[in-house]
Image (tube, rainbow, N blue to C red; front, side, top):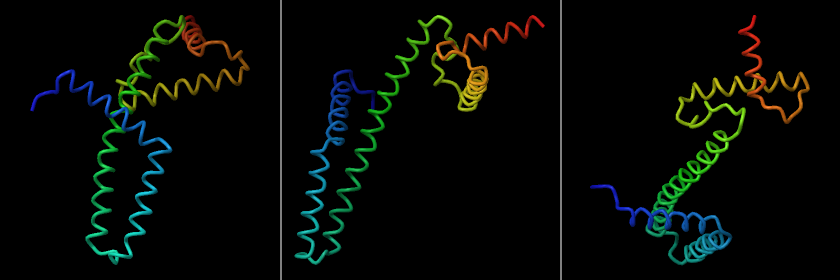
Length: 150
């Protein structure tokens, strides 16, 4: 099975976006609660038979599976959009650490190491009561230059 063509991809992307948007709406919650109420109301008339319970179990399992894939697809796209926007901001800001562009491609260990480094720098800045407008990276660069001089 080959990769779907661009038209199919766009159609599926649009469908996923609309489904996720609908699923998060008040109307969707009301529909689900209404269906559960109907199921509970009709249940006593069929004595909550195994078949009746199987209908609910199967339906909810299928809907859950589909929603998981729709949510993951939509979340992955949103994450990519946010990462791209942040990369643009980092790339154009003077004094920003350009090593952070596409940081999401690093290993988790490398990201944790960078995070700890920035946490240490932020803690030092708080102790120094540095102005909040100063760049953490510029402080780090100045500290590195000072180390090289000594």
